[in-house]
Length: 385
Image 1 (cartoon, one colour):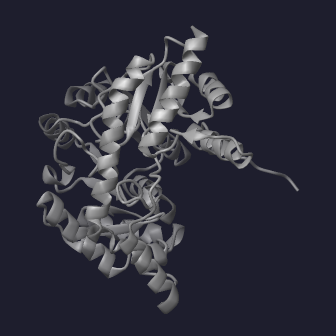
Image 2 (tube, rainbow, N blue to C red):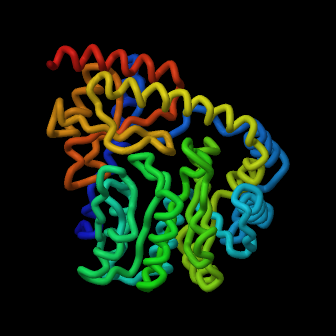
Image 3 (cartoon, rainbow, N blue to C red):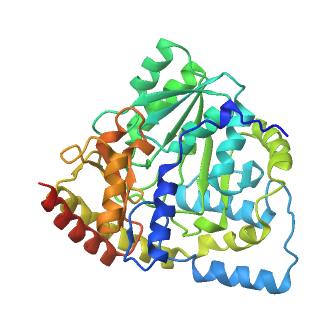
């Protein structure tokens, strides 16, 4: 029997997950691994969320739901936009998804055709590039400058070279943590509207902004597609639950695609997530710890030789220039975990052009682990000089 392997499957690995697998293997062998590799909160889901899941397991049939999501969760998400942003949206425009990953698939499939050119940023989340490629879309990478955020003139200049059909951006961004300033975000969306570029705003790191209030792109352009998730601020990575807010014209197309690709997001996770917006007090305690780690690392990482490549405005990442020590971030990451048992993600994951010079460090873990990790790294780096 012949085996067929598609050309579209030939995408780069998600190196952060490769590093995580290596860290898990080393930890299972009894090694004192400290992971700063993946954007996964070390805290469990809030108590109210886990209690709701336990009740549902005892009392409910866990099965398929409406493809767009259970009404109580869609309504809770719509209320969140009013409570947190002051934006009134209809719950009918909310689509519940199997994490933000499924939301990207659904958005790309509903909005673009094979061959369409879709712009993302470099550095940027690697799954954007890989999903676009797998779906037969042409990836256009806009290279960011030193302040780490997308600018309207960069979008205009890229479109002038050759028209782009779509633009996906994140604020706060992964891997840099940079936030697009409010006036620049307005300018970016003004350019996309004037040029007929369909925009998607990745807002999964909202509520993890440390330099000012969140501002959703929906506050500027009601026709934009917004993607969010319960994984980051809400500490629900393994529950695989996210959402989209989409224009009315996209609701039915996305529903039709969701019916065939996923049927629905996990019913148990949906029931649990409907309670997540009531856990703010507990979640703000977690965010306070992130803020403490952020302040520590903003000073400590440069002290040991890792200069910050972008402002750590939000999310829980530090993106560092490590060119003082290496021009091969993948090899550096391998050596680092093997010799110090500290795991971090090579910049090659986020930027195929310049990523060899950078590393991303996640501070989603415990503060004490951040201190121990940097102490280990300082000793290790001293031995390299």
